Image (cartoon, rainbow, N blue to C red; front, side, top):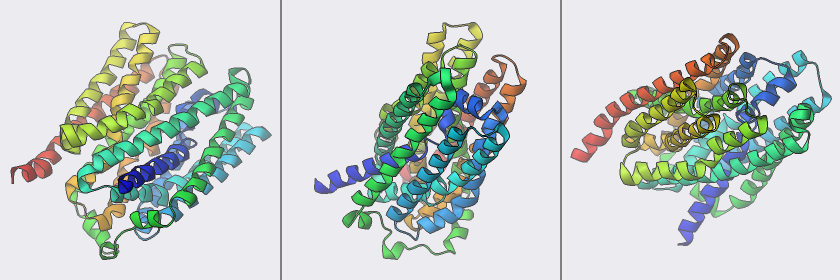
Length: 426
């Protein structure tokens, strides 16, 4: 019993860390309009911020994965959270100074690039490997589900505080003041998370998160991972899953630009879509993968189809002129099912017979491909919005996401037949 309690508490602490560190680089999920207004940038330039972040992540994922296979996860997590706190504080100071648009945007590009060291270097791979080691192979979906539930709770709480700080600091009437206090409120949780990691993951917890001596990483193992076609196939799946999950953020400006919702109201829907649904979707995805389908790949075959249908419903609602509040509610459904898939997507690795000793490296490679959407999708989608008036640009974005869902279904059906079905028939 004590071991189980410690396992779940460890997952909760990891969820708190993960829930706070990604708020800042993805702040446009909630503060899309204030970011553009305060920095004086276009939709395309807004997308380029995430492109810079993604470039840094792509460069750092594999070396970060290799280093995560060698180092103590606690040190990696604390280092990352402290760096994130410092960079967020620098951005807040820049807003307070009211620098010219060109200067502030140039500094922002550098900050987003450096944020990759906080969340795309050793943090992400160390975090995912820690989650895998905590649970047995038979409960990986459940472990990831619990982690993302804790992650969602923390992220929703932080985002709600950010939105409150925005309104308290001036809101839409004074976007610069409101945005400044919102960013300041993003720096505090990462600092607190670093302290909690330092306190909680002492002594025996470190042992729980360490790789056994016989499973130590060797550099030659990288080539074994690179030659595995299943890694590349599941990476494409992760690309599509993450692409849909991250780009459901475009429902937020859709609510303000097309449906005329206020920043606060659209922000509330964004918090629900991106964070609150984690409380239900993440554990639900784990249950569906482990208990119902008894396979993450099996669940992805069905879940990808459901996700496609939910996005198509939003497209139909916008085209046929459904009531605005009904469309806003419909935008929550893709968020729910995208999280059901995203919350357990890395648990699919254990179905592909990936050894624990190269898990960090496999995660690094999968992450490079899986998180490529951040490198160019936001820039492409931002360009669509800049060049296509009205709702047309948004419809193009949502249609692209629906196609991604179809790709998920096709590839996962093939992988399921090759790995899971064959194993069950033995």
